[in-house]
Image 1 (cartoon, rainbow, N blue to C red):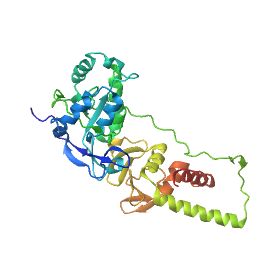
Image 2 (image 1 turned 30 degrees about the horizontal axis):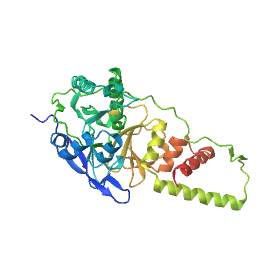
Image 3 (image 1 turned 90 degrees about the horizontal axis):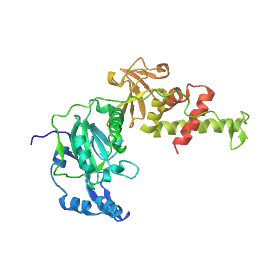
Image 4 (image 1 turned 135 degrees about the vertical axis):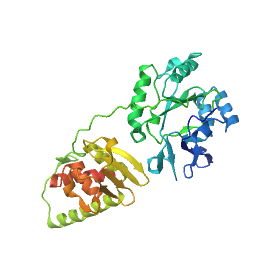
Length: 349
């Protein structure tokens, strides 16, 4: 059989943790492998057979943790999770489990096989096979815009729901990891169509991340303070600003920018990229946040609020604090600063 796909993914081995008293994935050294090679050979044959032979779910899940894992959509380096993503391989997984609350009909004799036949008739299905437990199904679509993985997933989820199948939400994350499993009767389709359907989320309403508080712990907030208190407050404020600029995480920037209307574009190494409001993500990136340097850089003169950025060669730069004030709190008035400090205190310990 010809190879239906040549994409790479990450393989995570397992080890026994004495501290936790169970098997865990070794996340420090994922191996880059061919996903087709991983699926087309019974690398863990005896262990997989043991897992599938156990009827008791708790015992089966315990043994299943000894299986290796793969990230079907992503190649990682040095770890696991969004910050270790190297490249999206263009594949998107779906996972179907027969549960009491979801797909209970799949528990009936012969229905899992019927569901598989139905899924194999979908023109976008590149792969479909048994899950590690042998009780469910999982498979792959190839998507047109890997950087819009979540939008593609939402469209796929809706399409499956129309035919009466509820899919697991975990693969909506491109970094989602699943247990490696072999199915000798798996379906492969090298001529599968490209899945280009997406559900684009509604723009988020622009509003402050933290609302102004008139009272704290029942005590009315006033502006009355001594000179010494004012000096201490200013020193504390400076220290808080410096701390935020040094410790701001990509998640914080993502919350600030997307709340304002920016759209996530892509991720490469330490750079997290965004497209400005009112511009299609497919039209290109506008801003990126460098996790190592803790700065934002703008490539587009159409980004709102650019007058608050520092002009650089080839673009503009600003600190996380500036981004928080302009895009998270609305400006640089005393009210905006107060909201910014509340936000920082809630995020940076």
